[in-house]
Amino acid sequence: MVDELRIDTWFGDLQVGEVRCLAEKANVYGEVMQVVATRSPAGDLVAIATDFSVWDTCVLYRARWSVECTFASLKVRGFDLERTGIIRPERLERLFGLVILAWVSCLRVGVWLQA
Image (cartoon, rainbow, N blue to C red; front, side):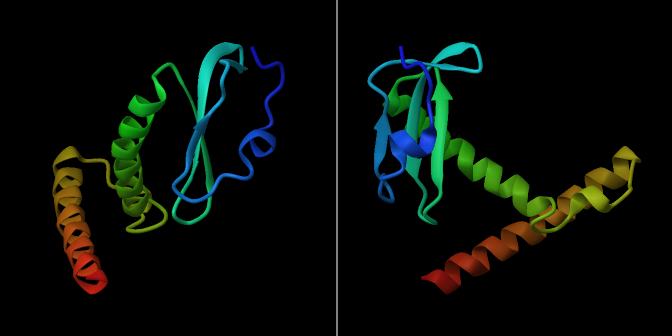
């Protein structure tokens, strides 16, 4: 088992889209886990500590990443829903419905412009 793990030491030379894992499981905050890393299209180093295989981790994280990006665009980096102050469920439901429609419209325009 790896004693001390510095992510940039082990995975700093990863190229965009490349996936690598440690040959041995590592102790991550007291838990023995598999460590898988990749480099995002933006060049960010993404390291994941998991119990899954490398392949399953890649598949699951891609699906999760799209959900994370969606939530981020609804929060501070986008529509800023956290600052509404609305607490009545029926109003929140209506607001979320409108924001999701706006988000989908923005997404479609972005995909169209990219194409």
